[in-house]
Amino acid sequence: MARTPTTSDAFNAVAEPQRRRIIDLLAHGEQSVNDIAAALQMRQPQVSKHLRVLREVGLVRARGEGRQQFYTLNSEALRPIYEWVSPYEQTWRERFERLDELLDELQTQPNEDGLGA
Amino acid sequence: MARTPTTSDAFNAVAEPQRRRIIDLLAHGEQSVNDIAAALQMRQPQVSKHLRVLREVGLVRARGEGRQQFYTLNSEALRPIYEWVSPYEQTWRERFERLDELLDELQTQPNEDGLGA
DNA sequence: TTGACATATTCCCATATAGGAATATAATAT
DNA sequence: ATATTATATTCCTATATGGGAATATGTCAA
Image (cartoon, rainbow over all chains, first blue to last red; front, side, top):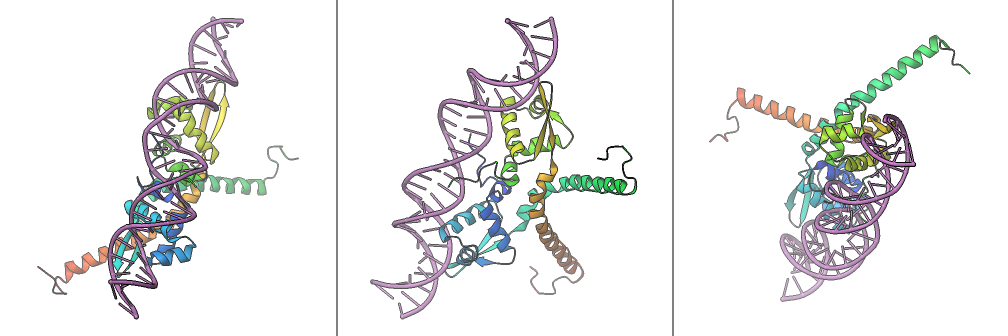
């Protein structure tokens, strides 16, 4: 088997940096394909290709107006990622707080353990 | 250019479902390679290969004890993902709240707009 | 030393990528 | 009808993947 296809889910779609840039741009509002290409300094065909992937996983939606396609972010599709990763935020915050406590102790009771240089 | 390598960052490492399973397992505590393989019903070589990727992006650390390697999760390495995705959580929560308000209005003032069937 | 166990690595292969370049498709303007 | 503009698609290629299978490496036991 090969690598999990980019179109299989949001995780894979979003792994590509350029696609994250597109998402970040669309967070500010609707943009046409050419707008995106100009703003991100990318060539139009590559933008269209990335948008296709994002569309297939539901991360963006297209609205046709004349010859232009305006793309909108559908942030809901990021939810599985958020829900998977957010529990871990606790973990490193706890570690950080424990480190804070430790530093406090060292400040008030220096060399309690006799390990000082 | 080919696809962004799995070892290039946490986003790419975590795009593979099996690797997320390994991470979720290690969240409960240190595990040896065989423990992981048994728990997740995977073959040992594949587990080792996935662990290599996770190690290279700093998501896990190995501690050797005898002939075993005990792997620990380093959740800090998930931070870039959390920080990228968490701002978007606002977005869909806001949309949800607006929907709630709308439903409330429809409840109290039905057919104000004359669109009823 | 030899054997058993734990883990890592190598080779193989089907599959898909991302970008470049060129072109197709569609809508509008003249 | 023809040209122009906006977007999508196709063809190409180098590159890497993930699993299977086999094997290498390392550690402990007898």
